[in-house]
Image 1 (spheres, rainbow, N blue to C red):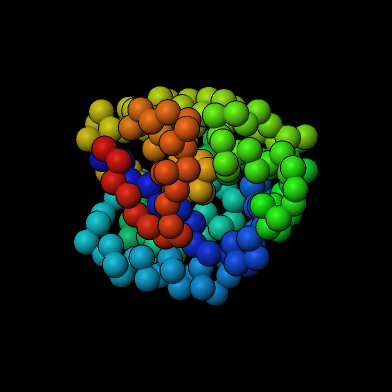
Image 2 (cartoon, rainbow, N blue to C red):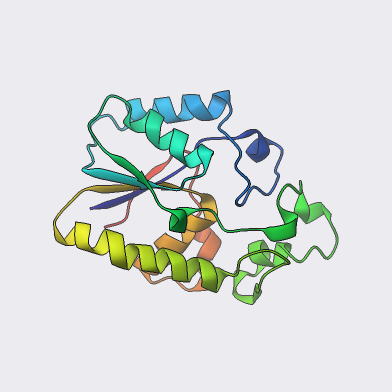
Length: 182
């Protein structure tokens, strides 16, 4: 079985800033969210957890799995999509003609921005991870948890469920929400 969780809240989530690969830690609320999720899902047990190496995902995994014997491994292919020069920008929707907004409004038309990553690149790296790491574990009937990010998780959900890129953001998970995929 495969489960996904999105990291807990950060200050940049509150400020509506684009985080991407910028390594922002959980805030107090985010840490509480992870602890609350641990209690909410206390009957779920995992054989292994993979997470993004970014602080907000790694700390969420640590708090969520604290006191269990579930090993946690990081993998760079689980990092959030890079927003390039727009990382750290707040309220991008209030910036007329901001090209990053295409990603959120019409993902099928999004290419990339300077220093950023395209959806194809995101799909390629998460697809490689699913094939190389998750596929064999699922074949062994392992219960696997991935702790990641908004867009990164959306790419995994879309791939597994066969959704078109137009439906990309329909898959967005809430912070510390647990979703069983397969």
